[in-house]
Length: 323
Image (cartoon, rainbow, N blue to C red; front, side, top):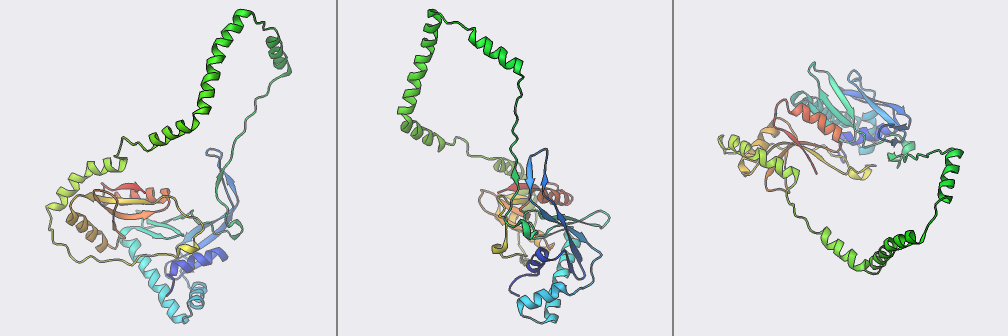
C-alpha cells in the first residue's frame, strides 16, 4: 500500500461522521461550535468532536471500499489490510495499555479493561473551519469618570500657581533629561551594537534537562551494568506514519517519555531492546552527552502527561522531555 490505513481513516473523518474499523471500533464525529475560554481568553474555531465506540465493530464497507479505490486494489486485499491493522492495534493496546494513532488520538486501557480515548486536537476535521486557528482575545477595560470628578480635576489644575523658584526646580530636572534623550538618539547605533553583543553572551550552559539527567544517570548505569552486556537482536516495529503534506497544523514541540538515560552505550541499547521486544515504539534520542531512551513521543502535552502516568506504573523513574 502507498499509504497506511490510518491515513485513510483521517481522510474519511473529514467527510463522514462515522468511520468504523472492523474488529476494533468506530469513530463518531459530532459538530462543535466555536468556544471562548473565559479563564485563558482563547477563542477556538468550530471543530468536530471525535468519540470512540468500542461496540461499533461491524464492517459497513466504507473504509474498505475507500482504500480499494484509492490504492487501486481489490476489496479482498483492502479487507486484509484493515484486519491486519485492527489486529495490530488490539495487540499493542493489550500489551502496553497505550495506543496512539497519529492525527486521530490516544487510547489507554483502564484498570477495568475499559478503553479511554482522547482526541488529537492538533487536527480540525471540520471542513468549514479549514485554516482557522485558535487565537487570544484582547480584553479592553475602560474606567468611567463622573462629571463631578472631571470638573474637580480641571479646577485643581487651574488653581496651581508657579513662582520663579518652582520654574528653576523644573528646569533643573528637565534640562538633564533633555540632554540624556538627545545623547540616546544620537548614539542609537552604538547602543544597538552593544545590546547585540550582550545578547550573544550566555553564562549558563546547563539546562533543566541536563540537571534531570545528571540526577538519574548513575542509578541507570549501575542497574544495567550489572546485567548481561551481550545484546540480542533488536526487533524493530514498523512505525505508523502519515504523509506530512496532508497535515493542517504543524506542532511546535515534541514531548518524549524518557524511560532511562545512560552514559554507557550498551546499557542504553539493552533497555531499548527490552522495550521493543514488549512491542513498544522505543528509540534513542541524540543531542545530549547522555543516551536517552524514549518510551514514546507526542505532539500534544496533555496526551504526553496522560501517557506518562500510565508508563510510571511499570517504570517509576520515567520522566518527560520537551524538544
